[in-house]
Amino acid sequence: MARLTIPPVVKMPVEAQATDTLRDSIVNGTIPAGARITEIQLSQQLNLSRATIRTALHQLAKEGLLNLVPYTGWTVLSLSARDVWELYTLRSAVERLAAQLVATSINSAKSSRLNWAFEGLVKECKRGIPARVAEADFALHKTIIQMADHTRLASQYALIEQQIRMYIRSSDALITEISAIIDQHRPIVDSILSGDVEASGHLSEQHNLTEGRKLSEHIERLEARAEAAKAPAAPAKKTATAKKDKNARRPK
Image 1 (cartoon, one colour):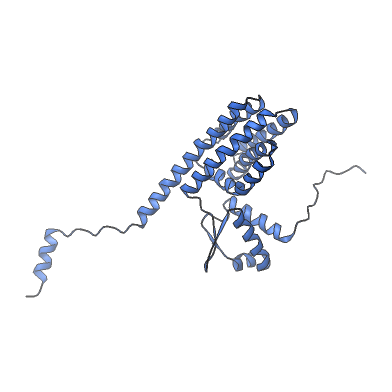
Image 2 (spheres, helix red, strand yellow):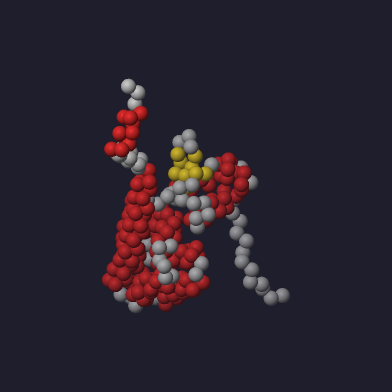
């Protein structure tokens, strides 16, 4: 009997499954940024014990996707302009180094892997499904990190990679022409494939800085509007006629 091409069944603890489900729901926006969630709510909806949910929530907090508010519950990370600034400045430094390391050590195996990741992004951009484009975008950057063969760099990237997934989804959403995402990444990929160390690092860094600033400025505008909406309206000035009418009605 011919061997069938069937993906292997991966056994995972229920806590890991709950963590993956909630993580994906946060990153893809199903659970919106800033939303308040509780153990009871999720336990009932997912039909899991509160202990299992609690374990998953604490793991997501370690990944920076959730914040625990005392006596209130959990809130989903909502990227502020400051958050975005911290992420894109950190990313630009880390991914610059990764791109340079890969360009230094590029070979046929790494070239094939990088081309495969880039073609995956091209394919998803042609399909035009935003969530899948964002995941393919992240996958390309993660591939470069992994191919750097730098254990400590990879471990530091892992600390913020889930926040980066949210960041990329928000950043890509600002791009009106989806083909621009391909144009942004092609020069980085080409420079790495050609072994141009300096160009690889520079282009990777500038890509992160440019797109990061755009997202940060966008969020700053949203934050300014939100603050303006909270401000109390100035009291209306009384007209001379109104004052006269009021005096006329005042009892003597």
